[in-house]
Image 1 (spheres, rainbow, N blue to C red):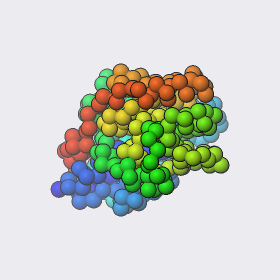
Image 2: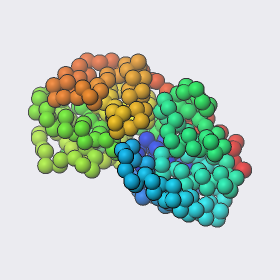
Image 3: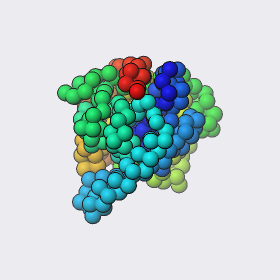
Image 4: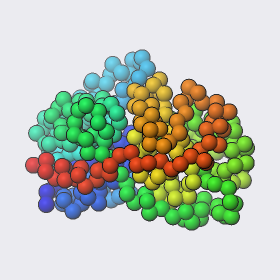
Length: 339
């Protein structure tokens, strides 16, 4: 058994939950699993799973032209110095990075200390953090064939298939007696604003066909209430919400695409546009469409187009599985790379 593995990655659920998915496979192979990240959702989630957490905040690159981006090199240098001090004392056998700007301090510090790094890319193109990790000597794994790295599939929380619809109904005070199908709408941990606006604008029409559970994020308008409509900011019990859902509307992060195909859900993906991302969600959604999902581009998102897409969704066939579950192979690779 190796000594210690350090997980890193954060900022969004797509960078955090694949790390958490690996825990059942990593714990038999390592004496301890720790986590390094920023002050975002990864800190709370690591605590929930009983992981020692080391907070090192990293500057985030902004896609718009802003003076803040010129401060990134100096801020990142300070973050790497902090991470290096922690790693020198912690002495992990290997680091597994799920990418995102939050992972950079650990990855770059590991390079200076000759600690092996394994990184994983979920999307159809390398993110900036994983590009830097690869240039720093990390072993690159990928979910999809993107021309670089080793194709292994996606780390997924397989416990998502053990959800319970009744528990979801109890938690949300839903009687469950209405026979209309349940539509789960997920804005994601970021990028929910446009999707929320579409939901609010046509809520009454959608409720003629569906019962609705809406994960609106921190920017949701929680003054909006209706019978058979439940709006929440976030859920720690996604397995139960997935079990309750007959149909799902979601952003198109790679983890969301993989989870909904794994669960074989009827799914409509509305990817973040290139103006709000590097375009990775568009490629993810197009790939999902090839496996039975519906696709609606945000540029085409209007109340009427959203209603039409949701009405078609209930007659859609469930998604076909589009990526292999990689939990065991990723854990094996991490163990093989450990010092």
